[in-house]
Length: 269
Length: 235
Image (cartoon, rainbow over all chains, first blue to last red; front, top):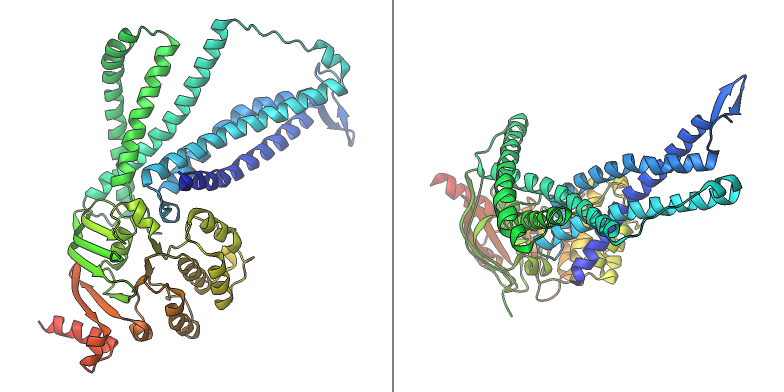
């Protein structure tokens, strides 16, 4: 467990660099967008566009918040690529831990880096909010929160959050599965000297695997989960989807751990 | 004490091609052993299997009596190419990585080796020549206190003078009971420190002989290695 913690810490440190870089980029690009929204350049100098309802700081905040939906997916894609690069890397795979545990630490650190990104964004947005309230009394007076805190809304919110987390993990697992299984199949096929041919065969294998997964999912979701599991537990709606996603995540994680332990080699270079 | 390395009936196939067949090898504690063979003979593959990064093999591999890959990795130190680090990483950051991941890593030992190799700890990987990088890899490998050291062509980029100096000192860096398995093309240069020679040919170990026996036959290790190939070719 000690090695797992240390490995997780090191992986997270590595991935946090991307988080900081993207938060800074988001901050700068929102500032630039806000600047060009609120200022126009004519007659040799910049003029403030006063026709806007929002002042500069709240507008910057709104742009920063909306850019989360662009930079969040970018970070997700970066972590997906980084995961697979590290899964194949000899330096990391030589860590004195089983490859399955290494894989879990790798995925978990990516997921935590995503959470960290969201937390940083929320923190910056809160700072913007307080600055906007203190610098603009009109903004503070007009600000109204209306939160409906009934139990159904809370459960729905928790359900959606869980589903989001499980979907994110599922996408990590799915990419790893396609990477591990296609590489393992390639290792069994006769050697091809051409890189183009290898890439072509790999793409073909991935397409075949995706087709197989879709077929398996339809059988699994329709018959096994809906009929056997959900009817016996009496769950419906969002809970059933969350449960189904959880089961699928566990299955694909188990397959990936098996593949990395027994078939997926670290690269030589 | 268990042997540092015990391999039984090892078979490894990749891309429908047998790379290692029926390989058996046992190394005793405290030895320095050369793993010799032509290019593509399977020396690197064998080391990768021992260290647990190559998969899907048949047979048993035990390091210090441990067969599980995670335990094997804990009891051996392998010259890794440091590909997991970005080029902008400094030597001291790599050392921190080793310190945190390997409980047997000795910072004191590393500092001694770093000074011996004339390496600056503030140097970045991108600022290093091939030879300097290889010196760093050797320093990192020997800063761990393990039962088995696997050195895969560790001196290829190092200049002749430094190479001789490092080879002479290897015996001082390892622990008394530790064993070193070293694959290298500079047979004559490493010969002086060797206890045993293992030759890999035709996908298996075809010769394991002590240097004492070789010298008793009035041969140098290099002569022995060359005559071995000549005999094979004649047959």
